Structure formats: C-alpha cells, structure tokens
Amino acid sequence: MNIVSELVELLGAHSVSSDPAERYIYSYDMTENKARKPLAVVMPSTTDQVRKIVELANQQKIPLVPFITGQNVGGLTIPEVDNSVIVDLKKMKRIIEVDEEAMYTLVEPGVTFGHLRRHLEINHPNLRYTYPLAPPFTSIMANVLLQGLCDLSTKHGAMGDFINGLEVVLPTGELVRVGSGVSGTKNWFSRYPLPDLVGLFSGWQGMTGIVTKIAVKLWPKPPITRYAALFTFGEIETTELLKELTRTGVLDDADCMSLSLVKMLLGVEYPVDVFDGEPDYATLLAFSGNSEIDVSDKIGTARNIVDKHTERESRHLFVSWDTIEKLVGSQAREWVDFPSDAFKILAEFDGLTWVGTYIHPRNWGAGLLKGREIVARHGFELMAFLKPMDGMHYGEFKFIIRFSKETETMKRVRSCNEALLELALSLGAIPYKTPVWAAEKLHSHIDPEFVKLVRRIKETLDPNNIMNPGRWAL
Image 1 (spheres, rainbow, N blue to C red):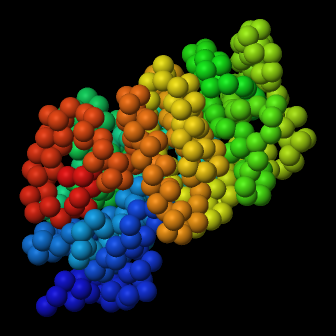
Image 2 (cartoon, rainbow, N blue to C red; image 1 turned 60 degrees about the vertical axis):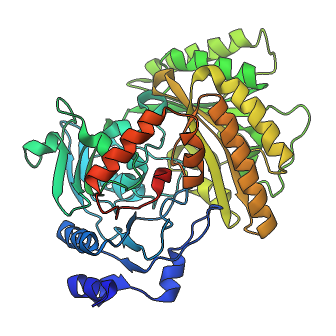
Image 3 (spheres, rainbow, N blue to C red; image 1 turned 45 degrees about the vertical axis):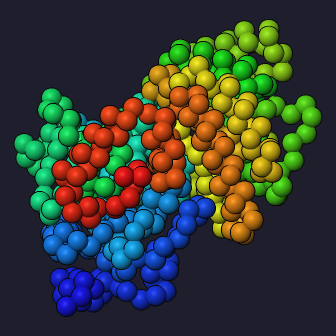
C-alpha cells in the first residue's frame, strides 16, 4: 500500500488529495522561490489525526510540510525535497479559550486574524489582539511561530514574544505541551518559570514538529486611540527623529514607509513616480490612553520633538489624522483599523517578495540609504519599510518588491534580493521568515557553533528528517 492509500485509510478520501491540479496549487507562492509539487495534500481536522499522519510518515520516512494559508514571503511551504506531503491545517480552526483575567487566547492553527478579531469584538470587547501587514485570512499561529511583526510590535516586540505556550506533535508522533499549560487545561497564562522550550518550535519553520494549539497574549483595548502622520526628509534625519520619538514611550506603534509605498497604498497606478520636493518618508504614529487628556499629552510630546528636529530640517511635517482623513477619505480609517486592502494593492501583480530583517538602531539610516540605491539600480519601485520594535531595542527593516513572474523579471528580483541581503548582513541584521537561499548566505556570516547546535537539535527531535527537511539550509 502506498502512502496516499494509507493516508486515505487513516483520514478518509475527503481529506486526502493527489490530484495534479491541487498539487500544483500547493507547489508555489507569490515569491520568486522555485516551485515544487508535493506528492499529496492531507487536511487533518483533529490533533489525533495529525499524530496519526506524523507517525505514519515517520515510519515510512515521508517528508511532511506544515501548511495553513501559504501567506508567506520565503517559499516556506514549498517542499524542498521531492515526494513531500503537505499537511494543510486550515480545518483546525477552533478558538478554544479566551481568558479575560490572564488575557490570553488558546487557538488552533486555522484561526485567522479575522476570526479572532470578530470573536473578541462580539464576546470580549475589552480585549484586543493585533494584526500584521497581511490579509485578514492569515493564520495567527503561522505569523507568531515565524516571529513576525504586528501593530503592537513597536511597544511589545516580535510576535514570538507573545507566546504563552504550545501543544506540539513531535516528528516521532508524541504529543507534548510547553509553557504553563503543562500543569493542566485552562492554565496557559505564561511560559515562565520553566525551561523555555517554546524556543524549540518558535522560528523553526516547522522543522521540529507540528504545533496544534498555541496560547498567545491578548491586550486591554484602550478606550481612546488616536493617530498622526509624520512626513520627513532624508534617511539619517528620518531615523534619528524616529528613534527619539520611540524612546519617549508615548507611541503604541510607528510604521515608517517610503512615500512611494504610501502612494501605492493610495492607489496610484504603476509605475509610481517620485517628484522633486516630495517627502522621502511617511510614518503612521499610533497613540492611546485612558482619556482624551492623556492621549493629547502624548501627541503634544511627539509634536514638540518634531518641532525641535525642524530646526535642522525645516521640511519635516507632523499632521493630525483628522487632516489625513479629509485628504484621502474613508481609506485613511481602513489603514488604521484592519488594513486588508493594503495587501491587495501590494499584491496587484502575481509576484510579491521582500528581504525582511531585524536590525540594530544604529544602522537604520545607512540601511535605508544604501538599500534604496540597490532597488533603483535593479529598476524596481521604492517600497521601503521600517518599524521600531520592543520599545526601541531594535527595528524591522525591509524593501518590498511587487513584480510579474516573467523569466527575466524573476532573475532581476533574485539579484535585487541577494544584494539587499548582503547589505543587511554587512550591517549585522538578521533575516526573518528566511528562505533557504538566504539561510545559506546567513550561515557564512554567523557563529558556526550556533549552526551546529541547531543541526544537533533538529537531528535529536527529528531523527528521520521528515519535518520540512531542507529549511534553514540544514
């Protein structure tokens, strides 16, 4: 009996497919990473089914690739080896628990940002989660395990820091919990004080097991939230101002974008032109508090800092969000509410990619300045993005490329991304959501003993190398 027949016997024909058309759909994503068809696709509905799939794959040494919505930019769900089986977890979409006192939720892989937002609005209106720059149908678990960013990252850091605990099917089929959930159900309040085994699964791109439940932090929903826009000139001037603003602690969030990216989000048609005299960057600033006075004081603090910086660059401009709404209409509210339309515009073509990194604040200005030169040299639109993270301990830094998947364009995309990665690595930045080609370059820049340790952990947990083999260039 072959593996497909055995999977059908385990889960039923309705949950397994080896149809060529379906295999093709799972063979690629929006990036320039090379497509590869899986052997089959299987859709479990329960943790027990996931265990059975993994046990069977481990016995027969069949590679497994965890998949939820495929909304990633690193080719992370494209099989790296032939005869892989995609394990699509989107049917597992229960919001199992929301704990209002300890402010966390326990969810399955298929729960999306849209699902949780609606659930909280209806059932727990005093709590909020977060959103990334991604469609509302993006999996919460996938973004968190990939240590991505969100609209709370300026204050609270990467989404990997939001994890309280996990339930995981190991590559051998064993089921384990990590975090405070080890002491029983309805007890997922923290990952401490224990050996922090969350790190065995966070950031691993599915190489060490299949996570079937994740507990993530929720946050109080502030009664008052206000926004402002900051328009700035020059990479060094922009980043120095952004650092000072963030260090005050008055910001909930700050998204700094090249003005050309903002114009794209406004719907300016391709190619987006840049005119003399325009600001180089626009930053969305978020403020919140318990009263209008509280929020007004925070906005006043930010405005005073901008005014001080205008002594050096008089063209910097701080604009209230009321003014922005008058200029662009209802679209302004959509940006700060749940920006699903933003992704649609970025994904206007069939290709979308970026090299995303976390970077030391001292290198923000140089990264933006040199990066825009690389993008211009390769003939792409400037789509630069920078976010201060974790109260200014570091920042997220990337250049986004949207493109059509033509052969010549794909070569240019890869060349541009490779140059951007070399720049980032030379500045001491660490890539996230790292595709295999980028991981190979990363290995030559980091401590080789770290790479050996990662390899040893992988081999210990996954002795038959069935879990997403080839990731991280291992």
